[in-house]
Image 1 (cartoon, rainbow, N blue to C red):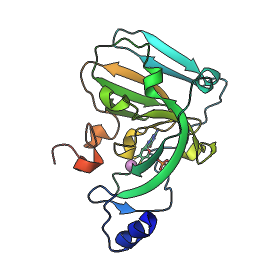
Image 2 (image 1 turned 90 degrees about the vertical axis):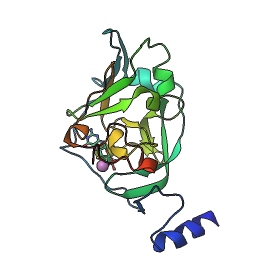
Image 3 (image 1 turned 30 degrees about the vertical axis):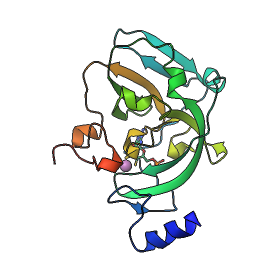
Image 4 (image 1 turned 180 degrees about the horizontal axis):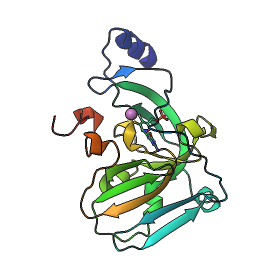
Length: 198
Ligand SMILES: Nc1nc2c(c(=O)[nH]1)N[C@H]1C(S)=C(S)[C@@H](COP(=O)(O)O)O[C@H]1N2
Ligand SMILES: [Mo]
């Protein structure tokens, strides 16, 4: 019933489940600012670096050994497509941040290949963000960020860095790749935080 209602409204161009200015798609478009990097699992690692320089790192097998969650979430891209009800498996950032000591409020997320995006630390915590490595029951495809990507679905999808390799804590906010080109420092789709200062 809910699905029929959603489709009906979708065809009329309005949908209560969608943030303002978004339309529904059933595809999963690939949006990458550069080529897909190749990351061998033997040399893959993920690091959280505190503002003190203290680092917590995980190898691929250490990541796989952590407790997983299976979030079902909606995705909202700033280019106006939204995809509802996607299924993932990965590790909550609450688990990864458990033993990290920090007084910082901001983070820079860094990817293999050089992509960066800044996310407020609070938005990575409280069960709202994951390092995911499975999509719809399959290993995450390289084009969509495999072996592992950040998933922070309550923000526009450019914040969900593909091929993630680390998160650096920052005392002061700083712009990542798209943010440096005018995209919003936070990027809440429900508030249409697409661009900063426009
Ligand atoms: N490393 C990296 N992560 C990235 C990007 C990118 O170019 N490089 N593009 C971002 C943007 S703008 C979007 S909309 C989503 C797209 O994810 P998808 O290709 O899986 O749909 O990834 C985000 N994460
Ligand atoms: Mo995007």
